[in-house]
Length: 251
Length: 379
Ligand SMILES: Nc1ncnc2c1ncn2[C@@H]1O[C@H](COP(=O)(O)OP(=O)(O)OP(=O)(O)O)[C@@H](O)[C@H]1O
Ligand SMILES: [Mg+2]
Image 1 (cartoon, helix red, strand yellow):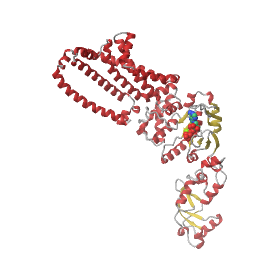
Image 2 (cartoon, chains in turn green, purple; image 1 turned 90 degrees about the horizontal axis):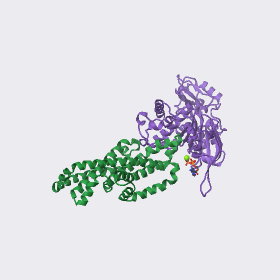
Image 3 (cartoon, protein in one colour; image 1 turned 135 degrees about the horizontal axis):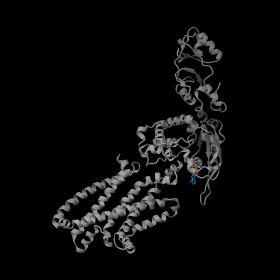
């Protein structure tokens, strides 16, 4: 565990330096290219698209987390054990399918617009959540389960008092991965006619407008960083101390 | 009370002979007694234990607790009535120590305030400061500390029966002695029926009212520690208990049982002539000089008196070779005798008052006797 924390810490400082350099370059660059002017011109659009993008990311991300946890838990139940491996495998294969393909397939089923985009993002996000939930619960050591049932816990009590809480850290890591994929995919939903910051990017590509492209990608990057920051804070504060490696290494 | 009747367990191995982890085991442990399951690794101790709380389904046989056939008891209800200490400790990392201890009381919906209070008492019993440890998480404790929590967690709901699988394995020798003593003291009070797995013969001799020795699923001998040490049923048991089994028996006998029937206490101002008569009539070699408040002050031997009988005791007395407490066991006594290079030792009580003395000779003759039930007095 400590080395994971080490990597997190290091990547944090790297990120800081990167951001500082970026801000500097950005200042120089935006002055010379009229980026600021274009941004001010489309400011209202930007606010709207950012809002839409954030809404769909969080709506689909939370839905996917909930569904993913449920599915992951179901996969660990004894009656499902026989199929669980096959399921986990098919999930792995599914995550190898390009997200654009997923979006397109869903679009052919449910048409253009918010609904398809939402379903598409849920599909993208749910995979790591399911995988981590299944893995996290399966990896709770056998003797801990034995201690629980030896003390007279029912199957449900073992799940909710022992297995699930002890899998929480792994599950939350899955949720963070899922959200990262989600934000990364969200510009693509512009292609199936849903509002997102992707509009800047694709307009930029079509009109060869570099500034628009830049506004779009920087905004998505900021959204990604912001989302992960919020999730990491939630992870730090919401997970009970006993199962939260971030906290027991620090204190 | 726990009674096992022809308890058998076959682990089916696909394509191979089944492993027979318990083979027709029959035994009975009386209420309030501690029975130690002893045997080499893999002999089926854990399996036997886990069949009792139904963590492992038995192949055949019967298990009775307080004369009730456990086949007719719901496993969940049964387990809440049985304290279980698992070999791998198995505390829940997501819960504080306090919550870990109170798992079963909470499952049974016992009063929270009461169970937390009990948790504090139990912590103190195993030498852990509740103010420091109750709010910690398991990974903030050392292995030995965790193991102690594992033991008191099983006690929290005050179950009449305890199953303990090598509960003191991870505790250092000094603390282990302390906890063994505490556990014995506590059980003398609470009177729980305890099945206790160990592979340490010394622990078994110390803790057990009964010892059950297993080999490859077969119960080789089940008897009192003294009987097992004095009369091992077969070569396996003999080898398992070790070639120093006579010395181990010493631990079972308190000093008070080996005290010579005469005290041979004399006053400092007794004339030697009178003392010599007394010693001759008892065939004693030693008399102990006792002060006004009953404390042993020194001793005098028959040889010293023979040479000159004119003075009083205090003129000739030698300093004592040390003293031993009447509640210590003969193992302690013998090791003290060796370290003081003496063949006798005066015995004292809690107040330091002289009670009589023991000699190596009487100890040797005690060991030569047939095994005795605990509590029999030598006269
Ligand atoms: N689930 C299982 N499947 C097959 N064989 C098993 C199983 N559990 C135990 N055994 C076998 O049963 C025998 C008894 O095992 P058990 O765990 O009761 O030993 P033990 O006396 O507790 O040993 P130790 O002192 O090492 O804890 C061993 O030979 C073991 O390999
Ligand atoms: Mg074992």
